[in-house]
Length: 130
Image (cartoon, rainbow, N blue to C red; front, side, top):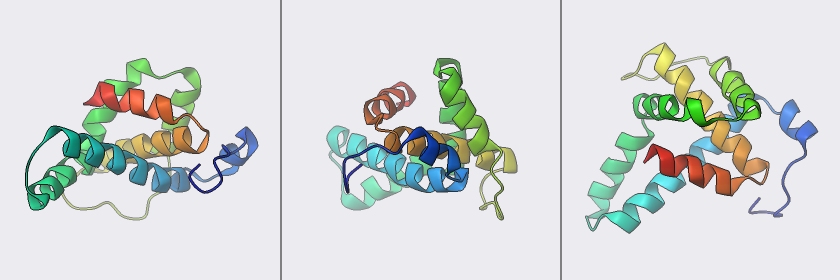
């Protein structure tokens, strides 16, 4: 969206691997977290970074995803399931496999929303999380 401001087609999004959606979604989600923290907290950059990390950790993202599930459309649920079922090769320390899959699902959802031109929906869901 930033490079050419044109959303991807449904076909392009359907053919995209869920881990690629999660890759983009990770950046979108972290940007939303950073934006929120910068606007809300008058702290040092070091504290901002520490707070950001706590919100973008897989365990925090998994908890956030739980709060969103009842609000998702059928299409968003489909993307969530694709992301949750994505084949991952390693799980970082500090979270369970289930948490990592839920975090990947959250990231895939945010990536899909961004690439499909639904950034406003991503922001709305983020506000629910916060």
